[in-house]
Amino acid sequence: MTTRGVLYIHSAPRALCPHVEWAVAGVLGVRVGLDWIRQPAAPGHWRAELSWQGEPGTASKLASALRGWQLMRYEVTSEPCATAEGERYSSTPSLGIFHAVTGIHGDILIPEDRLRAVLLRARSEGADLEAEIARLLGKPWDDELEPFRYAGEGAPVRWLHQVV
Image (cartoon, rainbow, N blue to C red; front, side):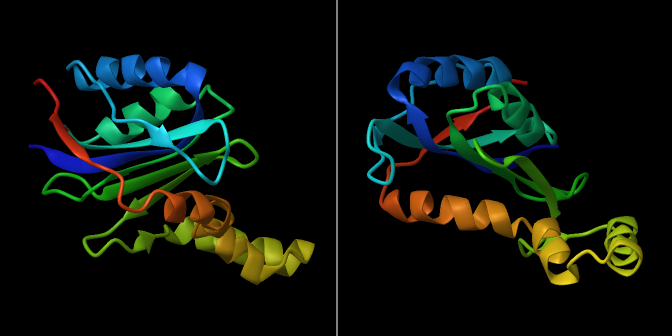
């Protein structure tokens, strides 16, 4: 069973670009040469997109392979398939990494235990319920990444398939 997804490198310093390609190639098992273009939202940074196809869990492997570089903004998505829900990973230097499970229509699926924990914090600790739910939905990451997403419209996308 395979799934597919997209890796969005929203901003990376030029020196990291070859390292990103090596890390992605290590996960996908094929040589990767991304089409890097300047990121106007972050002078001196570059962006790239890659559509991929592989086994369920490939998105988490890609996110893990890129996790250690604090100067980079990226997202990895995977579509749901017969054996797995979809996923979305978002990472920014200031917020770290966000993970969400996504359904067939791209909606974020929040497990009931996480919702119960948020309600409990709001009741017992006075946490801001709206802010807690926004965090569960990844709003802080979306807010920070939106200028980088917009700046990259029209970027080329290349399909790669994982060697199985």
